[in-house]
Image (cartoon, rainbow, N blue to C red; front, side, top):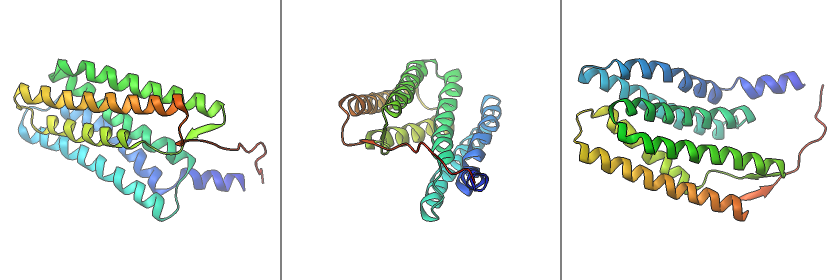
Length: 199
């Protein structure tokens, strides 16, 4: 029974879509870093659009067909964050001023990972993504795609985009910090199962 549950937890359509998004990352890197013509940048942006679309689809499938799994809860955000970080690092080649945004992004994500781990050790967990985090992630992803799609965008607009992303990241960072440190209603206790079925 354990083996059956393990397979059911791993081999689901949402999980396969998350893995597909991870596989798109090296493809995007090669295309973007070697882009020379507008068509190359359009192709790179199209890959990101496909990644974004599969992200929307896998969530809907998981909820509609009750395919939510522990593996999926790890793979889905991993694919999201890996894609976003890849985007920022690749854009750093063309826009050095995006470095501080990348550092802020990394610090925020590391904080969330550490805070979530500490909460789990106490038998608690965040019940879901905060609205500030969702807004920050959505705006960040869209704005980065714009920078990929429009490589000749005037520097002033690039700076505006980076500032907007930075402010939203800071707001999300502060929101998550307050949520974890004040143990708000979003942080709930859970019971660990000390014994699992092995057959």
